[in-house]
Amino acid sequence: MTLRRITTFKEADLYEPLQKWLVNQGYEVQAEVKSCDVIAIKDDEMTIIELKKSFNLQLVYQCLDRQKMAKYVYATIALPPKGKKNKKLKEAINLLKRLGIGLMIIHMYDTSSYLEVLLEAKPSTLRINKRKKKGVLKEIEKRTGNYNVGGKAGKIISSYRESAIHIFCLLQKIESGSPAQLIKLGAPPNTGNILRDNHYEWFHKKSRGLYTFDADFKSIEKSYPNVVEFFMDHIKIPIEDD
Image 1 (cartoon, rainbow, N blue to C red):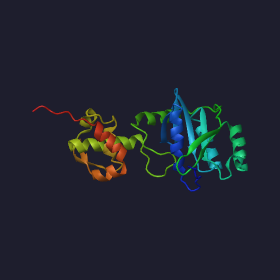
Image 2 (tube, rainbow, N blue to C red; image 1 turned 60 degrees about the vertical axis):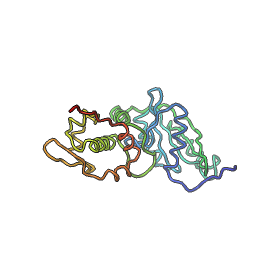
Image 3 (cartoon, helix red, strand yellow; image 1 turned 60 degrees about the horizontal axis):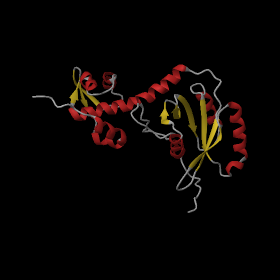
Image 4 (cartoon, one colour; image 1 turned 90 degrees about the vertical axis):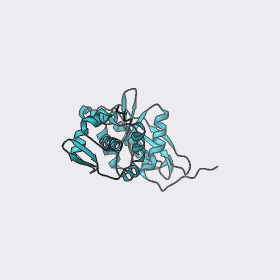
């Protein structure tokens, strides 16, 4: 069967072939972490990958900024219409080579897309911003899974949103509870702050120190099906003795 190259696609469509390639190379992958499209970690070394449908200066600026957080940074774009002989692609490679930024291209086909590394990244010579790097790693550590798609616009499932969903699912099981009770059942340490802030307007304070849910379960489940499924499957409420 002949593969047909596609020309109409979204930036997020680049993520799946990239993610598969990274996993096959032994990386742990997370998408949409802080300001980064994709974070890949292998042997305790963090690599940042930024996605764009085509090469532009904004992509270069983003990659330069990411060099302040990671030793290796890559730009990833779709193969241009004229392929690797494209003049602009050659110019992009020359520019990125000088900057130490790597380049991956995705060959976009109707049934099967694949990734090719055109330029290996060089170790960044910039001073690493330890605070920003720590923030990225801490965000990854708090997540239970990789629910995001790199380059996709819309709601990002951050560790904070995951925690709120976790609390919401717990309240579905016990109807109401205090932050201390919820934490004892596995909720995150910042449960009290999440309930008090009520950023997503999912919760309701019944009385002093006692909270319940204030949103329709079906609507939350529809918006975040994978996360809700994970928590509803993993939440275990101990049976109290009479």
